[in-house]
Amino acid sequence: MIIVKVGGGININWNYVAQDLKQLVAKKPVVLVHGAGAIRDEIAAKLKAPTQTITSPSGISSVYTDQKALDIFLMVYPGLVNKKVVATLQAHDIPAVGLSGVDGALWRAKRKANVLSREGDKTKLLTDNLTGRVDQVNTELIQLLVDNDYLPVIAPPALSFENEIVNTDNDWAVAIMAGALHVKKIVYLFEAPGLLEDINKPTSLIKHIDSEKIDNYLSFAQGRMKKKVLGVKKAFELAVETVYWGDGRIENPISNALQGNGTVISSSKVSL
Amino acid sequence: MIIVKVGGGININWNYVAQDLKQLVAKKPVVLVHGAGAIRDEIAAKLKAPTQTITSPSGISSVYTDQKALDIFLMVYPGLVNKKVVATLQAHDIPAVGLSGVDGALWRAKRKANVLSREGDKTKLLTDNLTGRVDQVNTELIQLLVDNDYLPVIAPPALSFENEIVNTDNDWAVAIMAGALHVKKIVYLFEAPGLLEDINKPTSLIKHIDSEKIDNYLSFAQGRMKKKVLGVKKAFELAVETVYWGDGRIENPISNALQGNGTVISSSKVSL
Image (tube, rainbow over all chains, first blue to last red; front, side, top):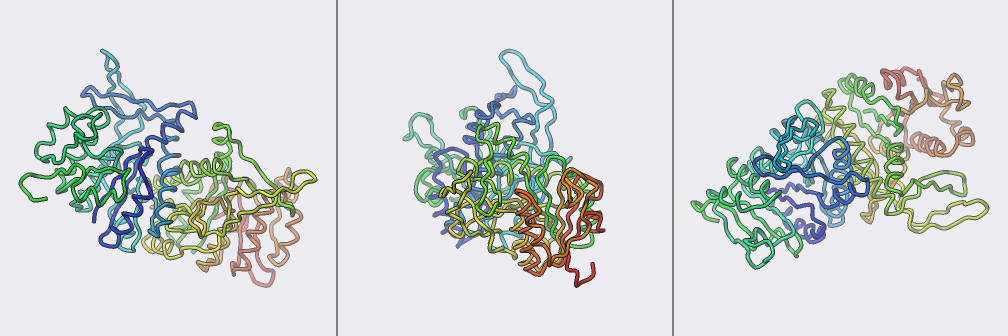
C-alpha cells in the first residue's frame, strides 16, 4: 500500500493526478489524502471570517480554528473539495470514496485545548482553539474499502477522543496513518518541483535528503513548511522507508515523484 | 434493513434522533439519509447567492442549481451538515460513516439538462440546471458498510452517468435506494407531527393514508411537499410496504413514527 498526499494549492492538476492514479491503483492499493487550503482561504474571506494564523513559541505556524473557522473548514475540506476530487477520480473510472477523519472515527485526535500563540514580544494563551493531533486510526475501515477495490479519498478534520470535530495537521495525520497501516512509501505532491534550497529558484531542487538528518531542514524550512518536515520526521519514526516530494502540477506527478524527479527522503543506510 | 430520512430543518433534534438510532441499530441495520435545506439557505444568503426556486409547468417546486448553487450545496450537505451529524452519532457510540451520492458512485442520476420553469404566464427553458434524478444505487457499498456494523449517513448530491455532480431530489433517491436494497419500511422525520390536513393546525394530523390513494394527496400537498408525495408513490411502486412520517423534534422520534404516532402510509389491503 502507498499513501499519496496532495496539497491544497489551486494549481494542482487533478486530471493529471487522476490519470496517474489510474495506472497506480491497478498495481497496488492507494490511500489518497488531500488538502484544500487555498479554497478554504477564499471561502473564509467571502464569509468575512478570513483565515487566521498563529505562531507557537517554537516558531511553528498553524491555522487558528474557532467554531466559525471550523464550520468553514467542514464546508470546504470534506465538502466542496473532497466531493469534486472524488467526482474527478470517478470520471477517470477510479472507484473513489471520500471520507473525512470524522467518518467511522477514521482519525482520532488528542484535543489541544490550550495553545500558546506568540504575538510580537508577548505570548498569549488560547483556550478556544478547536484543534488536535491525530493519535489513532481506524485501519479496519480503510482496509475494508481497499480490499473491496475502493480508493479512500481522505480529508481532515479529525474527531477528538471526546467526539469533538477538530482541525488537525494533515501531514502529521498522514504519518500516523502510514505507521498504523505499515505503509513504507508516502508521496507528497504540491506546487513546487520538490524541496528547494531557494524558494524563488525552481532549479535549486534538493534531490535527496538523508532521513537521519531531517532535523537540519527544520531550521531551513519556513512557516507552515516546518510542519511538513515534522510530519516526515514522525513518518520515519513510524518505520516509513521513503518519502517522495514532487510536483502536483505536471503530467504523471506521482510516477515522476516515485522515479526520484522531486526530492527523495530516505535513510542513507538503505538503498532507494 | 430500514431507511430513516431526516429532513433539513433547523428544529430537528439530532440528539433525540441519535439516542433513538442507538436502540434501533442494535436490532436491525439502518441506512440514514439527511437533508440540510435550512442551513444551505442560510449559507447561500451569506455568500450573496440566495437559493432560487423554480416551478415546473405541472406545479412542482425545486431548487434551481447553477454552478454557484451547486458549490454551496457541496459545502453544506456532504460537508458542514453531514460531518456534524456523523460526529453527533459518534458521540452516541454509533459507528457512523458519512457518504454523499458521489462517493463510490453511490447514487447515479440521469442528468436533466433541460428544465422548464413557469414564471408568471411564461414558461422558460433552463439549460444550465445541474440536476438529475437518481436511477441506480451502489448497493454493494452500502451492504459492505452495513455488514461491517457501520451506519451509512448519506447526503446528496448525486453523480450523473457522465460523472457530473448533480443536485437531486432526496426523497426520490430514498425511494430508488429502498427499491434497490429491498427495504420494506421507510421513516421520514421532519418538523411536523406528520401530514396535517391544515398546515397551521398540528391537531389536524392525518393518521393513515392508503398507499393506493396517494395521488389524492398530490393535489392536496403544497410546493416542495409534492415531491415528498411523489417520492413515496415511487417507493410503493418499488415494493416498499410502509412509509412512516413523523416528528423529528421529539424524543424517540423514530420509535414514535414506527408506532404509528405520525402519519402511516400503507396499503389498505395489508395489515400494518
